[in-house]
Image (cartoon, rainbow, N blue to C red; front, side):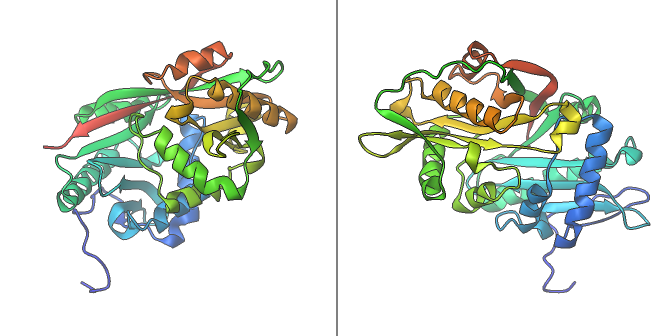
Length: 333
């Protein structure tokens, strides 16, 4: 073997008619085309964008040569992809990917999932993070994916639901004495990152956002800084809360609506209970409406003990049918 090419962490999957290999930078566009074929077949409400895939291929923590795999047919077309992601300090690793609709029900997904488990087993042993947990997210519009998870020993552990509210009538923002809601600027970016890490430290499944991952988020093609806002403590100048907004132009065809999407919403513990979350959401709604959006949308962990689901419902958000995903976990032995 070429000494410049790292040895695989686990034997590559095998499936009739496909040749498996790691993904490379040159695969970004063909991979996106596979993602789009899968999303169209499944009527998925959203799918990964090119920048998401480029981030995976360029990850310094999860090098593509060791943590990605693709099955290529005789014509050189990508028919299956799997990749894993794991922070070195965490015992949770994430398994993601998909199979071309024309190649399903041939055991390819199961073969890729087995490879992902073995890669995460090896990585967890190297990291010394204990018995690893493999986590995968499954859209509720993909029952075949859920069947694969169940057959592979995974168990559903958490449900996330996308919610929407019409922007025809935006409620008045609550008063937030001592705190001002201001537009996001690049100068606030690092303070917002640190505030996010603090605000989400006690959230299920959340991991710290590194400077590198935050930079990727800020450069994402869907990020809308002009729709994003920050709550600033008037006395100290500290970031008390924030909302990060996105617009996915590709989702219009799937939903039939122009949606402003709240990607992240957080309030630091010292400022909780002061109505900053609804104030930030209403600020976002006004920004979305001014830009011609029809709805405000967001995702919620339905079991979040902070009461986020109830807050959103009181503000008029309602769950969107077919827009839920379930986290499935498997603890490897």
